[in-house]
Amino acid sequence: MKKYIFSIIALFAFVGAFAQELTNFMGGGAIVSPEITKTEVTFRFLAPNADTVKISGGFTPTVKMKTNWGEMDVPAPLDMTKGENGLWSITLPLPEPELYTYSFVVDGVNINDPNNIFMQRDGTRYLSVLLIPGKVTENYYEANEHGNLNQVWYDSPTLDMKRRLFVYTPYGYADSKEDYPVLYLLHGAGGDEDAWSTMGRTCQILDNLIEKGLAKPMICVMPNGNANQYAARTLMIEEKPMDRSAWMNNSYPKSIVQDIVPFIEKTYRVDARPEARAIAGLSMGGGHTISTSLLFPGVFDYICPLSAAYGMGRGEDAEKQKKEAEKQFLALKEKGYKLYFLACGNTDFLFEASNSLDKMMTDLGMEHEYFVTPGGHTWSNWRIYLNTFAPKLFK
Image (cartoon, rainbow, N blue to C red; front, top):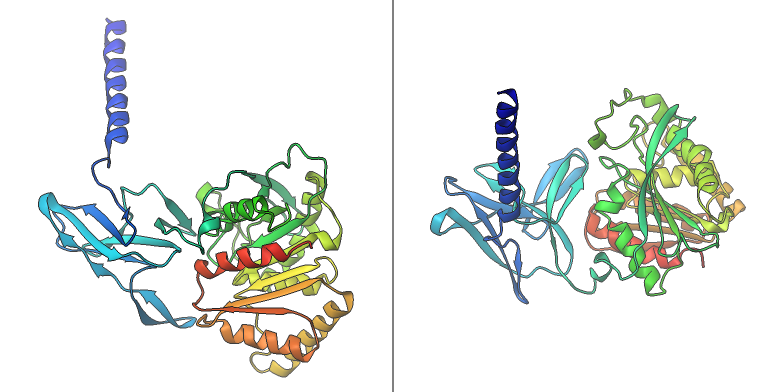
């Protein structure tokens, strides 16, 4: 009797599991979204009981909004039209080639596109992706020759933690005996070790640039810049309490040189000379890039702060802070470097900070490139910057 009951339970479990597999296999097949033609893109969402459905994303019009960081452009939702059987849709002129994120707003609630399997995680948000082909995005697609992306744990005595970082190794690394240069690539506030590989399309960009012969084969190390985190929050590991003194004492920039660089040079087949080391970062990571290069002049010959959150001369001690910054930059100048690549968008809320850094370096007679693009504090710019400075590295 017990065997009979067990068999019945097992049968129901199998049928339930099979039904779920069948649902997963068949789900969403009848609805195409987004549907891209040569001139238009159509989005569709099934919501028979919804009163309103809108779409909001990087391709919709923007409105000005005041934030803690100043006035910024934010996407404005567009109304979708309800058709037969409760299928909502909207057809838009094809946007310029770019990688856009978007979501539906259903009766005021943000919902991702269930019929689009292309998604990205931006910090605590998951977003649907629209990728429009063209010159700007040609390196965002998969190359023929793929490198590998590894999730690696390392000891950080400086932060007293065991932490995780992502390491990209180029195509051919496993079969080669040569030593590779290393790019240390830092994310911004709200991101983690997954940000550059996911939102930044780092692996695809480097794969394509290397395959085309436009960039030298390199290892790319993407650490977690949140000094209180062991790893990205998706791992559900409890974080340490925020320590403002650690931020003020540059504990994380110190850990890059004292913990991460030695670990990488011990674990991977790398060229350990300064001319084979580069450091770059966006926003908060741009600030970390500047701080690390100033704390340890001569360690990195390639320095690339992007939309950098770096303040010089603020508050009551403005003049004193500025003079201290100038002293540090002159020490960097004396040690020498091969490339200082500064980049920012002309509507970025940190544009004036980048202009100030550009002026100071010019006044100090420090050789550098200042790459200004249209647009603001966005991944569309940071992907362009990686495409632009990566070919300049290790030449």
